[in-house]
Length: 169
Image (cartoon, rainbow, N blue to C red):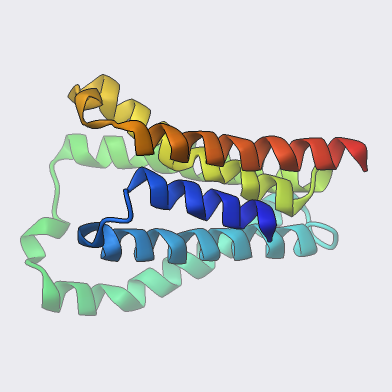
């Protein structure tokens, strides 16, 4: 819990405690909670199920859930946004197979070897990766300030402390 609180403090420093980001930070925390729950449940289920079988159940469940959500989505947004170009479908196929299915298979396999806590803690670096990519791709590095670097240090510190703690055990 202490390592997680250090990471949360780091994220708050990165966003400078600014209230204009409140919704985004809240959604980010909810997303992190759900991702943590996913990893913890995978750790529990990977003992009884084959990795590929477990992934099949997860993908089927999420597909069925989103099929039921589609009518609500169409009522809120335009139906035109659901129909893409042929290249969109190629990209979706590539991203879903490599970036989703491939990485979920790796994640489920990793949970067999290391703790779910360590996997979740390593996800704390995700905001940092995103910010670094934004700096490189969109040339937004000039917007970073001292509080960003304090937040970065706190997040890396939480991951380092967890790693040291795991090695000692």
